[in-house]
Length: 536
View (tube, one colour):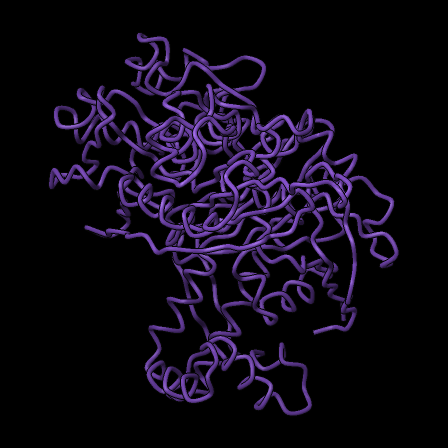
């Protein structure tokens, strides 16, 4: 059985003597699928305080998921004010944003435009997990254009070109012709903070087909029917691109400073996609002394797995590796100077929640978990321990199997038409059966991870250790099944807010307290108090 280590998260920040005063602080703001979080991080890498706020999701019809940029920004302001309350403003040096790769649409005056047939302008965000553009992405993939080689050979419906084409074909007058700017959500946030429309290299490379050496490819946009974007020299989707962590404009503008409760003019960083911020926050850990296979090996031997609503598997390499069905290679999209490949599963946390809450025994689970003063997942994990008897818990599902592609397969099959499946059901309807299907779902997700890792290995990656962060990494059963099924050790950070730390790193880099993200790796300080080396 693989060992799972809990390590203390250091930080990608430049270290200073603790005798120096006053302490410098950086704010990290993370916009996930269902909530916005913020953290105040000090110069030693400690998360001093953090806060969260839910945000709204609309599902007007199947596979259509929308949000409001105004609702998201309001949540950013609320949580940021909470984490900086009582802190000397002069000690706050910079702010960094990360967010889901959702599409934000505004008009020429930066007012929200409806991305729906109902004309509801406040719903101006097409979420990353929206699958409305199936027809459009099929036609894009049929072109076999050369840019597709940098997205695993097949573009995902979750990327931005098919969504833009859907808007043009379905909302020509109400949205497409009125649109002034199309932002990836992380770039919208840096614009909102600075008034500068610069885009992050991370977003445009990973979700829009921009290349770090050649920029936009005119022939691609013309071939798929979006030649409009070429005519205005890509002003609507970005013709000024910054590397993650670079300062944007002149820093935080007065209106945004007031909204966020931060000092006017502090550094604002070019942003990252949320999974990339999580990867940045964990992949560089120094794990010497723990007998891990990645010890004394470059970080190219690791995969950072960011697990929340969905899961992303981030692996880096010194030279470009083209992996069928896995996004990338993207140069400098996460770690400067290294190529990134990104595998993924479109529904993981969302799938577990869907399966558990949809079961007939869910009300009983809710009641018993509440009576035990624990979460429903903590209760399910304990219940599985009760019914496993002498067998390892994983053997409980020997006759029950889940195919987890309820929202299609992102990697490595790249088939959005795939559906979920459960094999081995009986007429039983009790809590035992709910616990078993919960376990089988987690195992299916872990098997999907193994499929991604095997595909990356076949293409040339040499991965021997998983570094997990995100909400699902707090579930010991989820972690243990990934260790057992992949056969690889799993490293967890004791600092559970790795994504927020990654965002704060951007703010620290933008503040010029050190020269670059890359330099911060050379001086990072990782410590290991209270290491837990027992297997779950």
